[in-house]
Length: 111
Image (cartoon, rainbow, N blue to C red):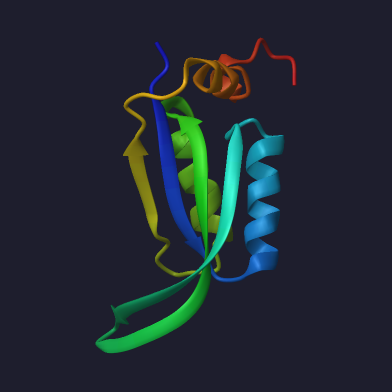
């Protein structure tokens, strides 16, 4: 059985976030990627910071997480990339079937 997850990541700008989202879907690493503008308040290297960012919500399965992490680390625009993997415990059956059919580890090598 496939274990579905939602990977949350922050990206430095909309242009880069759009590029990453499209790449994840084209590579079948994600069935869907949602982009949303956010404002983050955080401490970095001893300083309080507040920045506009783009949050990606990536719907995928555990078999794709390592490849997604690698891509995000390389392309996020940050030295330390926020990558959080959250389990999807349940959902609409039709949606979960659609999700599964659009992820690389469940493809029959036909993209």
